[in-house]
Image (cartoon, rainbow, N blue to C red; front, side, top):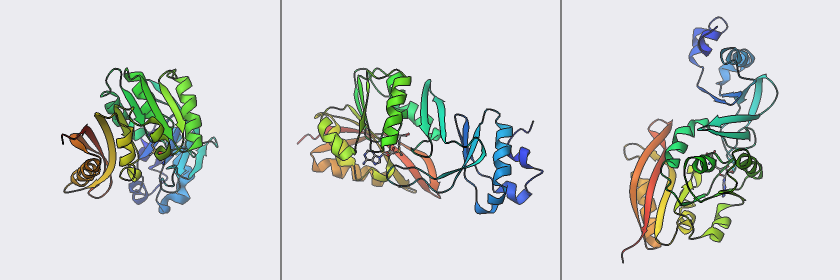
Length: 281
Ligand SMILES: C[S@@+](CC[C@H](N)C(=O)[O-])C[C@H]1O[C@@H](n2cnc3c(N)ncnc32)[C@H](O)[C@@H]1O
């Protein structure tokens, strides 16, 4: 048995080709791998090798392009195994169904989801503005005593899976799925949340005013995801949040800031936990 992908491919790829292999994600019984164009002629061999190393895999997909579009999806191509993109994935004691070609999905945020869930206090109302198939919302429901987790998404397919995942995980009494644009939905939920999640860095700044509206009058916590650059990874995002909140007479305190992952040299996907209070004036 080969011990890893490189080992499995050592007789079929040159040393230079082996160097070009990148990390892959395993989501349930599907693996998703990105390949540089030099390795495309070997994609079938690579896909089959992955299945040999990870025996539970049924399908290997190649990510053809970057995650993009308003639903944050990606084009996928089957390079080995069964021709499908739907799978069942387990994380933190929860089960999630998803069609990886039609919804956003990342197993790399597992730690971040648990970290957020661990902060939720009994009785809190949470609004998740960009809920996808429900990973954050359902893990929060399972791991905390939040009373309601409003879970908004604009992608009809994601919300279809969100509803199914709520049912499978038996959290239908507390996780409320809502199909729509957060900017249109949040006004109907204004002033209800103790905690707001914004897990979409591309829209974080554009939607920060919406997150402020979602919070209770006396404030709460916003989990603000953005992009940051060295040498000052958090400063510009914090400054943005403070100045936007100030317009509405609110103050922002940084509780915690973390770089979740790097996406380019010295550039990071960041998470800021912001405590928002009504200003003292
Ligand atoms: C990066 S994904 C995060 C999904 C989920 N939180 C997760 O981690 O799996 C962002 C999600 O926001 C949704 N979205 C994009 N624009 C939106 C909007 N204006 N209102 C509500 N949802 C939106 C997309 O459809 C996508 O599912």
